[in-house]
Length: 216
Length: 216
DNA sequence: TAGAAGTTTCGAACATCGTTCGGAGAAAGT
DNA sequence: ACTTTCTCCGAACGATGTTCGAAACTTCTA
Image 1 (cartoon, protein in one colour):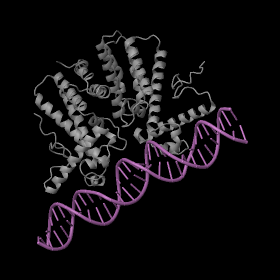
Image 2 (image 1 turned 90 degrees about the vertical axis):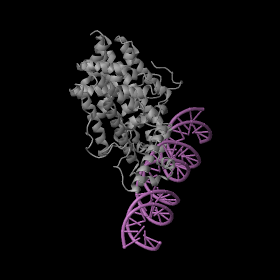
Image 3 (image 1 turned 30 degrees about the horizontal axis):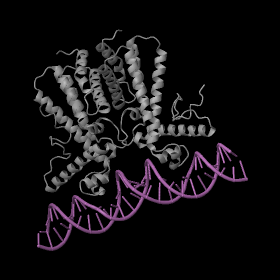
Image 4 (image 1 turned 30 degrees about the vertical axis):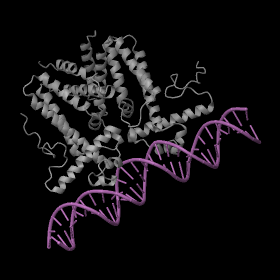
């Protein structure tokens, strides 16, 4: 059982996509709903035209308004990216917790194997999201403190998983993340939709476990 | 002696940074010189404002002309990126050949160690160049056939090096590149200017060599 | 229910961007 | 000296993110 390690900064409960806490007034619920629609359309457009190809006029059109109207929901274009970034981090966290909870008692190597695969498949499932979350590619965008905290939290979850598996040396943690992201990156960049590097994942984890001296 | 192999398309000989082949007419030499100046200024600006932050008006100003004048040297902004991409690939190839030539007869593990380190240090030395060459981040830019051929050539050099060291299994080649790029990417993204992942490089190569069953 | 307060929408406009066009001026070739 | 070629740039086009202000709509309060 994984208890409440959640209640730190903001975005307390797992609200599946909302940035603000759950609204009470009807007007606020409508507003939050529109925000969700905008973000959903933004994801679509980014997948169509690339992350940097997002146009506010086109985005507005897709949700039935003009570009300036978007500014009553988000302070800027980068604020939209920031909300998407936060959504991605929350989705990854939920996936981590979900997988960890479903696993129960599993040998340490299985723990690392499933951790690596969870990350890998999460990234491969949505390359644009991966680019936004892990590759600092948009020139003006930088995640806000709140969103960055979510990323830190996810790193902490990873570190906890590794520690639980007996990996304590920081060098080993770094090597593990490097190999996982390396395989992921190659897969997305050089064989999108395929499994050329996906097939190497289990072997790589096994190799690292040997190197770390972990039991089976 | 380099005779008149000029009349083909372009880029035949090793001209260390020029895109077109070595010009004979004075006017063409002047033109090539201006192209080099533009590219040099473009590198500078990209390092200052990020790869996507390059502005043609600002670029023109830095080389003493207005933005439209750049169009007599490059067909478009993406053509400038393409020339920079090609420059990067040529620089990496030269670095590869230079290191390989200096090595002479070296045990296979040393070969792989120095190959990985060459790549790593080349990338870390200029993150913007790395982003342009290896991360598909600019939405409209795609390397031209000529430039892409340089990238393929570099991959071939890498493959040859691995083969010479006894690594023939394609899965092993893929794993090697994934680990090398993974360490590189983490270093650039999460510890720029530091050596947090650089220190792991030799260990990682050694680990892979063990896994490949290579002699010492 | 009437009016005040707050919120949402959008046309117009600004600065900036990559890019095109056309003409002026310089350089090169004959 | 004449012609051809090339270089440079002001003006302008369409697109971008963003701001402003005035309407229209919604919500709250007397």
